[in-house]
Image (cartoon, rainbow, N blue to C red; front, side):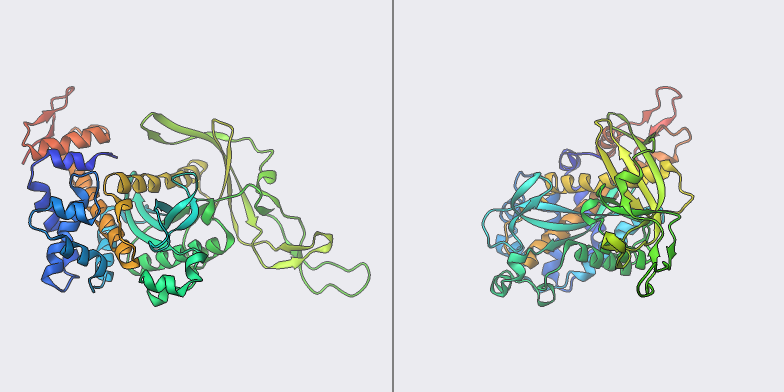
Length: 451
């Protein structure tokens, strides 16, 4: 993935990408009902894509000729308009770009460091990007991806207890009435998944790290008929796959009234302790093949109803049968995962699916570094979410250009290997500057022919 998209566009034809953006935004603008919004939306998205170290409202307005700051600020922070049509257009475009049965939907969260205490949702909380607790806002994110192409489709703010317990504070920040109840990140994630599914977006599997791998989240996905692969703690309890629930015979006293499992649950790290992993390569990275040792075992999750079992006290009964996977990295660190992928899934397929989650972290980094997701200086709920929506739209636009540039090379008679990001970057520059044709150094086949 290119890390300097703005540089690529700035160095190319000054008007070309803006014309492309205006055409690309037409389905989004159809959801806006006022000419002023039709004008402000492209200006805001273009401001996020264009040059400039700081991309809050005031600097973007200053860099756009003839755009008053107050009009751009009113559009993003205070204007009365519905974002839902734009979200639906984004889902449609994301599905067109990377959706399908082989696509994945990655659930994660990203932190926006913030000073002060009046910006909506800001509080001391753990920031994964900083690796420590810091004053920040936390957005629950959904990323649709296929291969190495991610498209962000959801960024929803999590409100800590210090906010949900203070109605006056939420009113001042403009939190909508239907968003003021305390909701966990897991509940927000499930609601966002329901939203994108209702929007018709297609994907084959939901991925999440151990922060979202708890039983309620897994059960919510299973209840919706979704495939999933999530991280778990090595101490999470599982049963052997052949566990059976029996009706115990009482040796004395009253007869037993409830069934119990005929085997005890054990920690995930214990049940896999004697298994030898196998080296698996799941993809090629910038520094070569990505490889680790994996092993997998069919188990029953210990996430059923709780019941007292003899001297063990209250225990969870066996739940669904799934794959338990262990990853052992070169450093010796071990990670554990659960997935309900089919029983006939190969170890390489399990590993590749689980490790595909990394793509969302790349998307978060690029939206911050290139499109200034974390530069918004407003304090309101509405302003933050509209800024996040415009950032996702800008990101989808750049991905559409990347795929279009890559797609042109697939029509040649002697195709080269999948182009690297520097090659794609050069192809975009060549196209927009009308460079002469480029030929394969081995067979003289035309690799790139300007229109």
